[in-house]
Length: 326
Image (cartoon, rainbow, N blue to C red; front, side, top):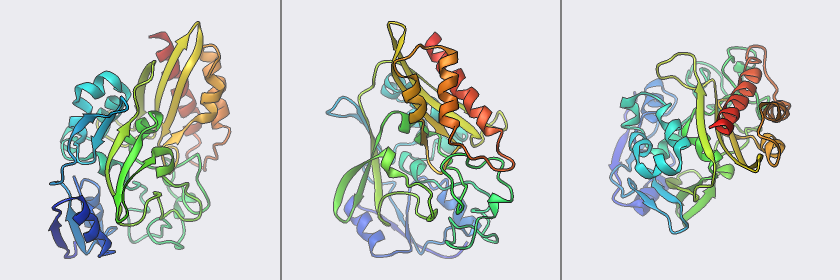
């Protein structure tokens, strides 16, 4: 690991100013992703600005009836928070499905949203990767891609986003709190991540140096919710497919439905085609399968990841059917 400078931020404004003055600087929260990438030589910051001492480690009720979650709240604390477990069980389930207990005790909410892809070409500086070095190519398209994207990818990148938390937040219509030199603002999670397009190195719609300070969860909506994740082994591992879903039924018809998918695209994938298909219709497995097929009509699998299409279809049907029967 190369040498770097270290500074401990006194407050949000000074943290933002420090990073703005040094394009080679990075914020350091839990460090569970950043430090790994530094060891691999993927990240080579000149300066680490430690933000763990900032007052961003609380979960509080929002004036609008939702919750505000600071960016420094640890994943294990957020998963166990009584208000999260009671109002947003899908979020707690997503957090508990991620990583190991030791990692969840250190990883932060903000860092989780900003974590980078685990594509093997991205994490190996000896290989080409458009996400790491723009214009160098994407060998994953013809190489090892069995766990990579089937939706929304491009000829420039087929990497997937690894977060479980972000998938649940997408289904909950969460907003991301950010702070830059112009001050604080909110970004809907739907707009936070960029489509991969021809600039896979640009993953989020915030300026370089912007600090994620938290998230806002809207008031909970009626219905039952669930997060289910498929991975290659029973112990902790990244998803090869996941579904976060919420379903409400009135008079035998679906009155509310939210579906988000993980490990299928470069960002959490909100399944709006499937939602429109399900909403207002009968809560049956047959209707859910029609909706899942409609969503996955846009899938463009590669040579070795076509298995994800039936996997995700079956996950959507299984989770919605389970929610309808609870």
